[in-house]
Image (cartoon, rainbow, N blue to C red):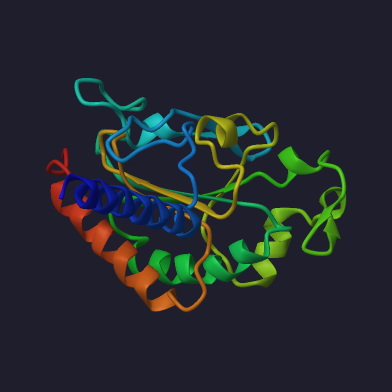
Length: 216
């Protein structure tokens, strides 16, 4: 009886191990450098035009601290960041979906920022998606031809990209008015376009509902 019990124990253990191995094949390993839901979003100051910079703290700041321009812009906003590069084909599939959501919410208290890391990757050796990193087109004109109107911020040295661990593209982050990350997405998933728009819209609605009243 004891022998049969031990045999059953080892069989169950072996099957559990196989199951865990199968699950590990389905689920990519977690990156310890990835930010997590509830983390404080790293601050940034990124150029959007020559000599002009956009600060995250203009719109979202940790609880207990005032916004950077509290006198002229005292109202907290939710913020969406989407890291992309012009060489990134999956990014080009996701951006029209983001643009659709942007057009619906652009007049509300949520800020959309595309963060371009094209220049930060130009020194990468070799090529990607059939194009050399060094030959990737500049973002502004390239996206304009594709009908994108969302604001672009330029992370030319890749500092913000590294702080958000956004080297694998596309990479999307949503935060509330207190710089708390509430939603993240890595990569583009074929066949889930409607789901992407729906889930992002639902997330935006939640963040807008939780914002403090407007300061008049």
